Length: 302
Image 1: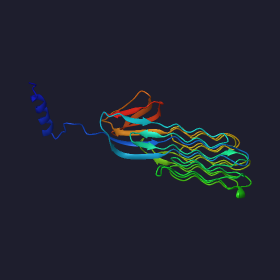
Image 2: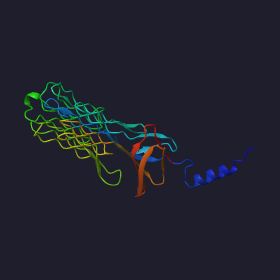
Image 3: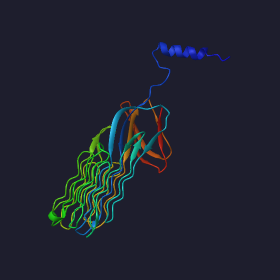
């Protein structure tokens, strides 16, 4: 018969010291930002590209996780800018059951065809500006709670001479509306201090204008500026939206990021396709995940 006396004695010793036989579940703080939407592209008066919406922004503290259990971790890529068309939506970022939705692409199209609205996403893409027929509205934030709507492009009847398009929504504010002479600015992002210093993420891309107008600037938090030709890209690992293009392609959205903060007594172990850096200070270790492979990647805690 097995001798359990040693195990029983150790259990009694731990209980006498007020210690648990089982380790406490690791407590995790997290920030999950999705990839930003691409800016819309356009040619001529009818469709000047709207700014891309920022990637969805989610953060919380004190999530209890089961030690040793593999949890999904994904960093979403930014969406491609549109070439005389709506920009592509950004890709989702994921940590465990928490999903941040990719930003909506900015509206666009080719003269003199109709335009389409900015796409919905973590934050919505900006509406197109232009002299042609069609919708100029910005896309909504969908699902709600991760960002804000894109701004509207100027309507054809009121748009001359520069037909400003709308800026993409940001995590902290909606995208600005276009005016007859200016593109809407991208909505500002939201700051987080999870890394140990305050950093702003998820700004929307600026909206474009026709020749001679003032292009919209990207929102604080990585949003791209609208360009006289190609819009500029959102900043990598911020989830910023791409800037709208006017006579060419919109800028691509910035990739997202997943940041995980745990007590330094615990350790995070990642699967092979994860790119991350980490730093320990003040009793905590912060892991910043900047990229994951196209296969399923995981993290576990001990």
